[in-house]
Length: 105
Image (cartoon, rainbow, N blue to C red):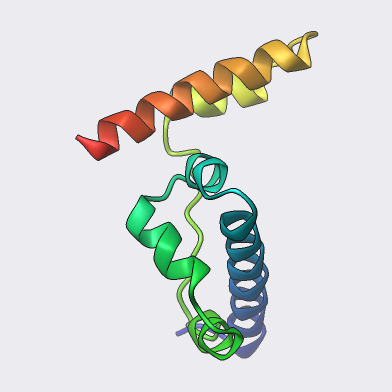
């Protein structure tokens, strides 16, 4: 059973995530799909949700965003102390783009 405080915090996180994700999709769908790890169909759906639909969806007790740290190479790349930030970001982008291609197949 989830307590009331956690329920509200999950709802707040869901709302913030959905609003940010929708804004990213509306600004640049291809970039948002890559950054958020979502399909074209999901991006189109999210981009067309009304504010009322987003608020209703956010009120779920389930966390709607997905953390992509379940893959060791991604977490390892992000957590190691590298002097070159742009190199670390590029390496992470390469790993994530490989996941997007694998998920599409």
